[in-house]
Image (tube, rainbow over the protein chains, first blue to last red):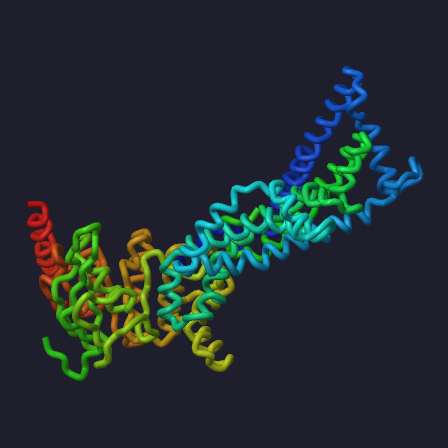
Length: 288
Length: 259
């Protein structure tokens, strides 16, 4: 019983403390490098932006400094003292309600439906053509109809976010189920598993990596769609800030809104990745 | 073939046809076979001789076109916990630890917790994976994975062990080690074992009885009894005589198949 787990990165339980510390040190250096490189590139872009604005003398695009001032005012107020000063939290809060309202609704419908569609051929034959037909329709094209269905206001925004998030969740879940090794079903059934237990104990966990990657893509779309969603005539939210900035020709406000949306999407994506790493710790391929 | 009361497994007139496009291919000619309780049987044959199909029919994963498989006199209608399949590529549940994989069968039967734990511990120990009990399959070597797969079906009370080229993907040293462990487990548990292999040496080393299968359509060509005492010496003249005889039966079909 001594064949070694050669595939294990930490297979040797006997490894000396000295190698453990040196490994930790190497890891820290690696993290530092990732941060320097990852942060360095946007800083470079800001420098290019600043120089380009200065050299062309354009008045259409604000300089990074002007955007930073706007960002400060948007966050803390006290500079312009207008309708947008110090309002960042309320806009983020409103947008998050719509993003996660639409996203959770999409997950709540998309995951179970995807599991069923993946397993049940009849259901697939019934719904697959319709889904394939509806899927290529851009979410923006739904804007007029969603405003008729849901009126002006947050529900139309939630519906649009839902539409954008729904398909990646549904398709990834379906794909995840369809690509489960059939031997796992055979193994489970010979061990006495069947029916609803099969769904809970085999289908769901086996397709979890695909479901999680679908959720992650959909979550990204949800943030992307918030600007479109908030074109539906809502007074608050990051998307509406961007739209207002356009109407008022305040490009510094537009860019500020863009940056805040990007930052929100980034931070929440990291949270999703951290959660999925915990959930999928068994799967070597799906760790990041 | 007799079917006395000591037979655990009886195969009666089992055939299998597959549809391939518009054609039908006869994968198994009528097969009759009786395997007494506790016997270690190796099935050997060229690819396409239907040995895996026969094994899958016994497991209940596939239905025979005609005929039936009887276990203790009762016809097989589907997969069941009395038969445990060990797949070549393990088919472990990757999201479960070694312990959870092994306890999967007992957990389906909603046994009391202490009983599940006791059974699981027993089989974790039997395959020597105590130190790896909380690892996930992707953290194990091939040999360890196959031990988990064996323990998983034994913990489920299987009294017929079906093995489909279980050691085919392992390196020579690990394979040898697992062959020995399998023999020990077989001796200890008395589990009836049907073992499909490509290797004549493996068959002669392990089995009480070697069934040579031939293709087109698949049928049992010859039935060798291996009466050598265990542990078997692969370099002994008796061993090599048997190996030569069986290899000759095998290759005779290969030549025929090519002609």
